[in-house]
Image (cartoon, rainbow, N blue to C red):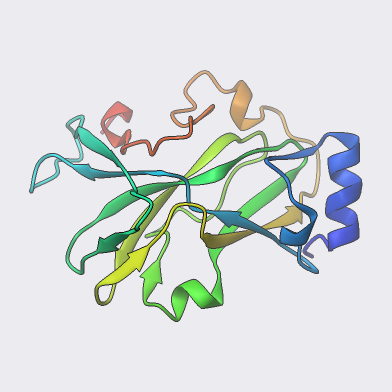
Length: 178
């Protein structure tokens, strides 16, 4: 079951869903449109190592836009800060984004109950495409959970991505024990 527009509004009133900035015109019948923030990042090294802290370099999308290139991997961020305290949020690309050949996440489309922060986007493209800060980039959908939650994501001591800022965050895989 997915929350409808009216249920999303009810949950926002109760404080279990928070979206900032919020614009009523971005609320669809069962989703909320999110926008591309002004920051992108790329990894500094050509070869990434899952056991190493791979660093990134940030750059701001200029007003005239930025052309994403195939075979390049970019980290982006949503303009919106969100909190989800009683539902499972999923971030999916908009069909208009997909029709430009833009993928906004490699694998990480699901959030956890208790996620608070801006969403980091894992961006790749099929052909060169110019993007702009503030453009619609994806949509959030919300699923109710069944049962009580023992520990929400923002309460976990080992939550690697809690409180993400308005800049993309690199992989924290290196913090795992393997």
